Image (cartoon, rainbow, N blue to C red; front, side):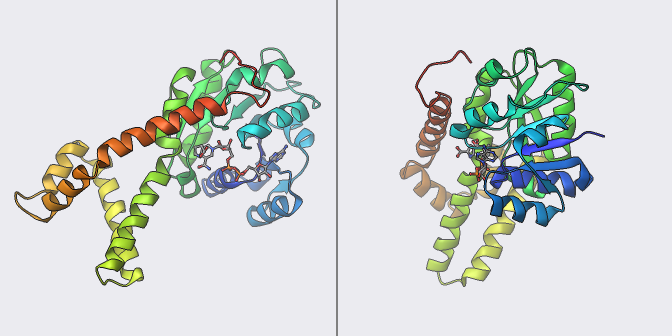
Length: 277
Ligand SMILES: NC(=O)C1=CN([C@@H]2O[C@H](COP(=O)(O)OP(=O)(O)OC[C@H]3O[C@@H](n4cnc5c(N)ncnc54)[C@H](O)[C@@H]3O)[C@@H](O)[C@H]2O)C=CC1
Ligand SMILES: O=C(O)[C@@H]1CCC=N1
């Protein structure tokens, strides 16, 4: 049975653990290493898993998932380097940190250890993640398949070359926040029109769920689906004209580009030494 070590029990580490256990992984197969004791205990208790040190967690694992902030990756790699890695089993390191290149792990870990970068997103919490994998230079197809199989239990997966992962981060990694912002603004607008917050939230949530399901299941593109809602001279046309006049489309373009630029910047190590990605 595959044993998973999750390093970092924050939002994404918790979402991963929740998704894996909900997806049927036995609790004994997951172990957590989380720096803050209170947080470690809370997550371990919530899911019935064991919390331990980084060294202990990684030594028994088949897959080591690093889910700490980009600035904390170097210290985690230093801790990992003190463990016995690649002993009897071939271990795979999965890095979920935005921006950090796979090559950043290599100097301190055993030569040839496979690193797979993954950009997930928080819908993992409900089994609806978009997890995009990018192989580091020692990751072979069997390593990619093993990680795909694991993350396939918590949503959809795709594979890209590592030079595309900053773009992926800007689209699907950060993407849920764009939709949540839209939902927040629509709820506020509905309240402004006199609906209760409760009714407004139900209306907006189900509209998002229904629209997402149409995008997912229909053969029509987003453009065609939008046209299908827009009667000539009707209410939707009035709303869309206002959104375009306010530069909605350009704002989305600039926002996604800003996210990509930030992902690139996060990959520069704290001492500023540029690394080959
Ligand atoms: N939150 C999101 O939507 C997404 C986050 N990510 C990436 O996932 C990573 C984690 O993000 P979040 O979960 O949002 O951050 P977070 O701040 O909620 O969680 C990080 C956790 O790592 C722990 N930690 C830090 N250093 C540690 C160490 N040496 N040993 C053990 N635990 C340690 C912290 O105490 C914290 O609980 C980041 O690199 C982020 O770029 C990727 C995709 C989506
Ligand atoms: O905001 C961030 O940096 C992380 C990466 C993608 C989503 N959250």
